[in-house]
Length: 141
Image (cartoon, rainbow, N blue to C red):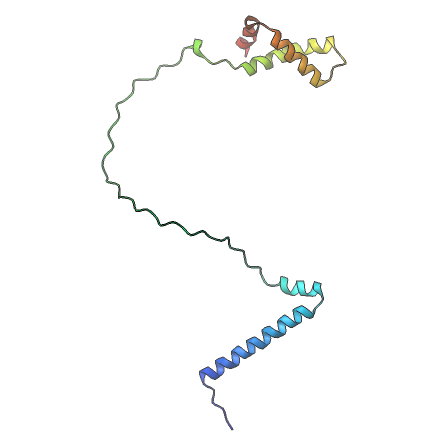
């Protein structure tokens, strides 16, 4: 008795063979030691998880922009540089200049002070200064 090998017969044999191989693979992985199973499974690259996508709202149709020319702007007059009297004063720099100049005085008066205590003393002295005394340091800064 001879069987003919037509396309459906060959396809059925291939699918059965793949099913048998897959079944044997799964049984082998489950029966192996956990370390061996991990090494067998680790050989296959893990598929990247896809983030679930939200359903997008339908896009609103916009009217096409017309290629109309923009109105030209009038030229502004030349900019005048600011006068030095209106220059902003960096008060932080003035305080740092004060600390730099007065730190040695505090250290000589109180040698037992730690760094944080010296900073606190300088801050206390800065706040005691009048505006005219602070202006001297602001000019230097």
